[in-house]
Length: 291
Image (cartoon, rainbow, N blue to C red; front, side):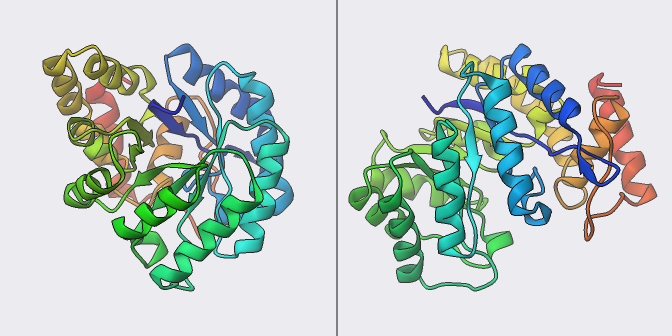
């Protein structure tokens, strides 16, 4: 069920509030262009600055708009175990297909604490759960051995979004957990390499602006057209780099604004791009043919 190009969709704002119409339009744009799944309220969705009410609203609106055409993997993680449980229960109740649980950030738990955190959440819901390892933001790495413990002990923990940037770590996860465990790339520059070691797809920023090509990269690989998949990897490479010139989701929201698809409104502490990086982003979009 969970595979392919799964977009970590932005949360569009207008005048400080969630722009419902733009979000609906962005979801339709994704589905029309072959995206295999939608993640609302992930890092790219600016979940840290959404209120609990807004978070639930975005997840529910996404589920209602998608209408089961593709899986919705709701971002429901938190550095508070009880808050993560509450958000995950809500996602389960309103019909999300799975939940994405980020490693708790700032409080830097031990591996045992991480195990207990995710196990407690898993015990409270039946919805499939995908772990989200992003040590650059959380401050702690979710070790492959801990992932193995969780996969063995919690039947509804079905995979991991791996954003450590380490192909070696990704390989060790599959070596320990087996090829049925769902490994998803969490870094667009590694989407193709992680497919080659047994990954099932990617939770992607770049698909926000180039959904058809990102989906086709996966589809080509799944069809055994490895040369075509590699060509798309290198075609997308400069775009992937441009979208991380500054902290995600700053560049991708600016790109969507330039493309006329959503506003480039952020919530502090995120802010507009520097002039130099903005010009680099525009150049990348032009060279790709997006503007």
